[in-house]
Amino acid sequence: MSEPARSHRGRTHQSAASPAPTITALCGVITGAGFLPDREVTVRIVYTAEDISDYLTYTTDLHGNLRAELSTSTAAGALHITATDHRTDPDGACRLLWSNTQMVRTRTR
Image 1 (cartoon, rainbow, N blue to C red):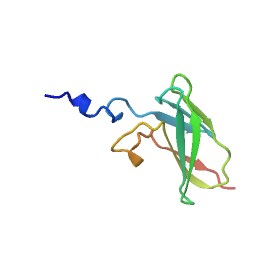
Image 2 (cartoon, one colour):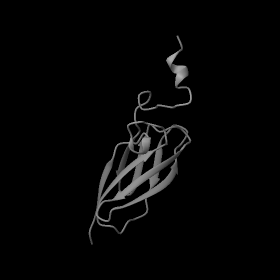
Image 3 (tube, rainbow, N blue to C red):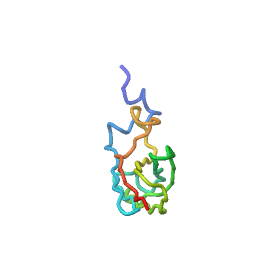
Image 4 (cartoon, helix red, strand yellow):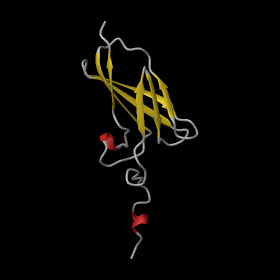
């Protein structure tokens, strides 16, 4: 009988093996933990009022922590922010393991 691990050797199903990373967004700064160390992370920002998504790239430190300073947005309304270090998750959006979603409200002037 073959070993189950060998039949999936090329696939990296990470969601069961490791928990999703977590982020916090406060005052234009996103901090996060639980990412892979020294890895590129894609931060997705959805401007819900305008139905626009931005994708920004940052790099984690040697401990898998993320610190991303966002430029000031002139958009008013809610922003939904998530991040991924590109680990796979068959149940995730675009088959990726994403962090929790942070909602940030921007001020109207």
